Length: 56
Image 1 (tube, rainbow, N blue to C red):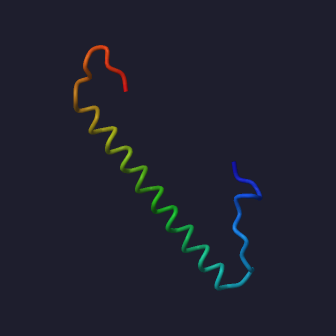
Image 2: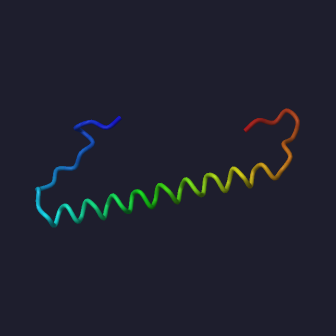
Image 3: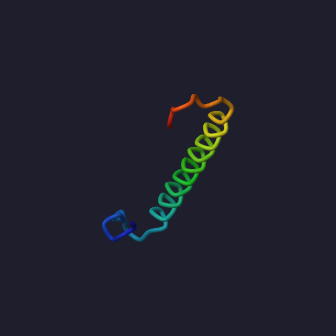
């Protein structure tokens, strides 16, 4: 899944390190928010009885 083609070309400077860390933190935050949203929607969906013969 992760290969050399997935990497961004950056210069090895302290400034680019800070930028990459900020991007990583944003991506991790977004991922955790989407995961929490998915779990909340799943719990919400289980509150309703499923109609016979219906599939998700």
